Image 1 (cartoon, one colour):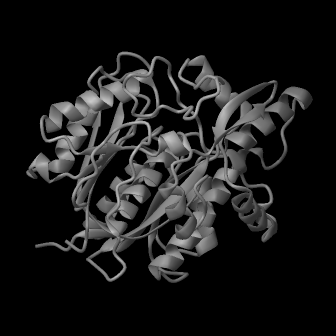
Image 2: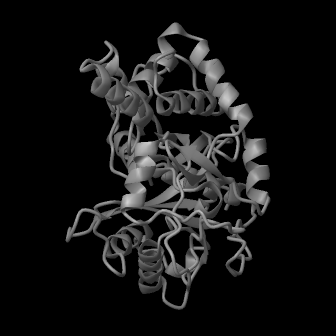
Length: 387
């Protein structure tokens, strides 16, 4: 029987914090991390890095003259990758692959340079190299001096979990023994907020104890809120002393497009991806599903219906972290995966405070979902390595 592929480390930077102690404490507290922020001539809810995390990123930027002109999304990725590799015990110059994706890429820099162009009809020299999508993985590879392949991609909000798929495929093929995977996003910019508002899916500015109502199936308004952050996981063969979770199942599927953000009423793509991830496993064996649940009426409802179709009367406990962190686009899947590994590790269920959900008696298996514009779904099944 082939050895399983396990996650031996996960590191992230997000509004929850930038180390495992802060992140663990953040999940245990029933508060959200949203505040109203000014974007150009308007204000909107958003979820930002803490001041201490912003200082970490500033120090990283100032540590190397070559990092001065990099987008935040690249620096978030470098910071998380350094922590993940160190925690996994990987060495510099080691032969491991890298696949860190992003939905939007260098959004902040792109807006800045485009504004320069509109004003001056010219762009700075570094405009093109610093706004290309490949920046994240290539700069992480440079920073870590890794010797394996480095890949970048964008598959909207399922980007990070697609990176997990790629990492597993490379390892199983024998072309790499270890892979660094994840996603990074720095989307808190005026143009990005305007895009989400144009789609009429962004939360209103009304004061609310929980402005993002992710997983609330009775909400009357869309309530998606953007957050920033990055997460990176180390994948390798075998169950090791530091293994956080076994990747027991993988699933992926794509909807037949009816329009640019197509998702059927019962999220057929998620039904297919969850079924593939489960394989021959009885649905009753799943203890928790970490839902994509972006906080929109259609998105949350469609995913719930898809889960009902697959699990019927054997519904697992359902949860999401977007009510707390917001939607980090391409990084959201890896942050959900991190949440799942914490629940496996500590045997504690993190629910949604305004929704009732019975915590499981044990936590052995957790299914993590992500789906993006265009109906690109991925489901990752994690198993407790100690079971």
